[in-house]
Image 1 (cartoon, one colour):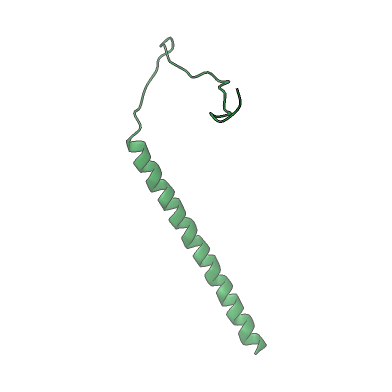
Image 2 (tube, helix red, strand yellow; image 1 turned 90 degrees about the vertical axis):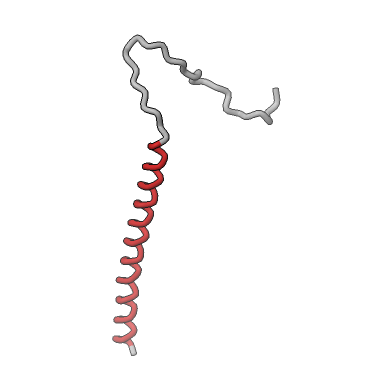
Length: 69
């Protein structure tokens, strides 16, 4: 019947929102865990003004090795 169908649809919509929230939390937790694992391997470097630092050129050729000369 129509009222039962509407109630079932409303209940499934509520469940969809709960599933979305749960998936969002899982995604956030996974990204946070990956960032924590990555950051354990990062070496912290502190530079003072006047230190010599090797920098890559800003306008590097980004076409790749398969382009014409």
